[in-house]
Image (cartoon, rainbow, N blue to C red; front, side):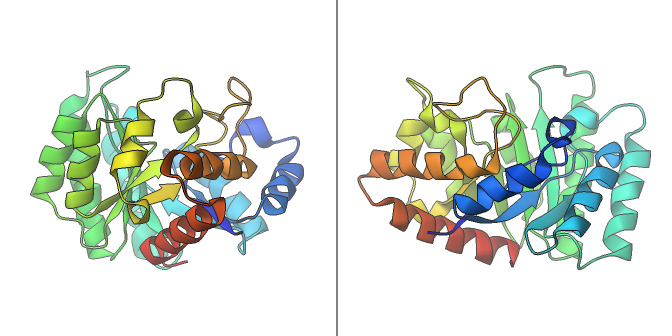
Length: 256
């Protein structure tokens, strides 16, 4: 079985001491490729250094995360635009980008502006998008109706309702299913039942949101297998089928 972790922050300082072990663990679990979403300009150097160390394993994205939108958002956008112009073939997606109203809504208007700009760039450079959405599904759908992303994308770490999941799928997006699906009484179980398997990809969001039985500990890309096992159990199919379908979807979406 081959898995693809479509969203992991393995350049995070949480992995500084044992990144080689983490990569080995992932490969032993069948995870062949790992996509690295950017957060802001401060994350780019570490992200790209990790990509350069193992370009056969890691695939970088570039983008401004909604919680990184503040007074200096125009400078952050300029860096993303420069990277896309200078290295158009380096990045497999524009991400992670989106809307996050959970922590603070001070810059909600600017978040929408930053998102719209990056969606337009995704079309300019023929890239899919990795979308972060928290407490903002109504607004994200409004923005996505303004700009149709021609190469599609993934609603990373999907946390919405079944209706929101089906709406996203109808709009041409796939859902990133992570460790939350393994949590007791997770609402994602109903989403995984309702949405076709070929509209899902696997992700860990490492080091965050480790699946059961590792909940509360550092997450790793190797745990994609645990997520796949849970999806297989929910849908009544084999883990091999989940691996095959989600890997194919990720390969087609991100061109990897």
